[in-house]
Length: 268
Image (tube, rainbow, N blue to C red; front, side, top):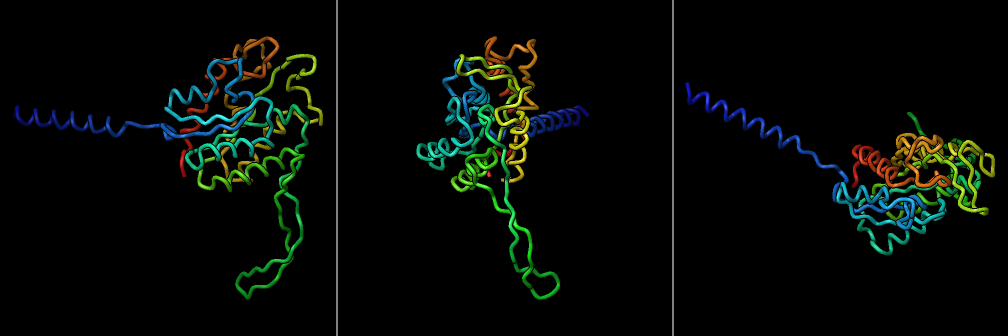
């Protein structure tokens, strides 16, 4: 009887150990090589935060970071940053995160359209011999003077450059005041920009781009929790700069992204 009890006990401990071993989980982005394309909130030189959002991910996930964000850049610079990535690292990268759009909004760039339509003839068949039919056809708009056109240009190029790499889009954060000097005075997001658009038009366009180009979109605008329009939220660095998050804001961004990225493979 004693022998049976000991054997049963050892079996139970073995099952527990096996279950614990099976429960070990590694984040799918752990140890990967990730490139970051963006503006000032990604720029390593940003003074408002000592530790940037991507640096937190680097610490937590042992990511190798290739950071190309530059202050003031818009979506028309995404290709330049991707080209620099290509020249410096070739294909030795697992994923590319693109965090742009807030400066396109601030500059008053028109939203534009994803497609233009034409009527064309095309062969089609369904249960009989193929025949020519007239149908409407969509053509991607590559227009550097519109927001959607710039995204089309960038993603078409980057997808050709990196056809098997994971590309992720991040929506712009909410914007509080940004009063840097008399020649750089940016109102809060409850005002329209120079072309009469609110920030959410640019946020929504990036969400739409996910379907246009088959790339996942992480909606930081909604999920980060950062809302600089409320003075009580102390996640921004300076009284006159409620556009750039401080260290706590960056940590919150990174923490949100950490969990969002759990749902995405880093490699194809």
